[in-house]
Image (cartoon, rainbow, N blue to C red):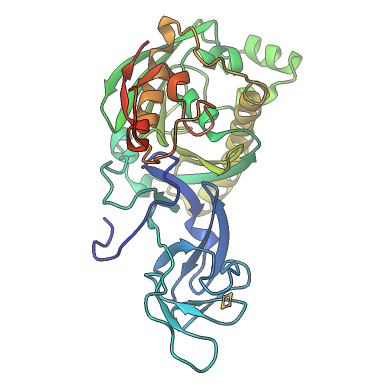
Length: 380
Ligand code: FES
């Protein structure tokens, strides 16, 4: 999966040790360098001429210039824009800008990444991933030749975790996205690395019906007609950070997706959406179909993000929420998120990075800092 000889580190251990979608492969051409701000850290993505992609700290070990802003790939090394220090794919300093020998032991942190379906996935951990990469195509019974992954990315101004955990909250779909009367989540699977929940939307409104179209027009929510969530759906949460969504309310594979909500700062994140649509076997027709459907899906999906933001941006969750029975999947999600955080800092209870006691998860009484992250179990 990932080379074993190289030493990697976690990008930010205050966030779950898991997969995050951080860019699209097309963002970085061979020989190109781009900056990125992810999980509250500055990184640089750069690609060698043979196509190999690397991700490392963007902060030059010399005087701290950002390698992603003006840096270049030279002889398959990344060169700092300030004085020309060069680093190899393992972060080791290999040359100075001028004469002189590089000091030994100077090395930048590097992060594990892989590319799949045109997306770039970062593993926020130092060890080999303990989560198998989601096989969405296999679950849907299609191959890469049968589909397009159409990709959308938006920056939203509130904590990533507030959006992440809504994948497990079936009760919010009918209300926030106005898709039915009420909703419930049925847990099908819960392991330390994956939660599968089926969200049943009761009294769902058929999205194609005249009554629904009229209702949408009157509410000025026409985007809901093409929004992907319109009926029952199944979500798999891998490591609490990478999600697959399969829809029952839409025909075929259209609208099923791979997602991540990747923090930029504490209170901002990118929606990284890789949505499936069928590939037609007639080239020109497929291009037109792809173009039109991609725009429709982006519009519909943005509608969901906007509806979600309208609620999430104004939340003030109590320290100990009075959970109800339909919060089971949300609490399970929070348990997994908190359980995969390696940070040794205290749980802060802000629910921005992790919930601590606010998640309904009891943290053992401790006397050493190492114990602070130990999750004992759910109170819900
Ligand atoms: S700051 Fe990078 S070479 Fe000087």
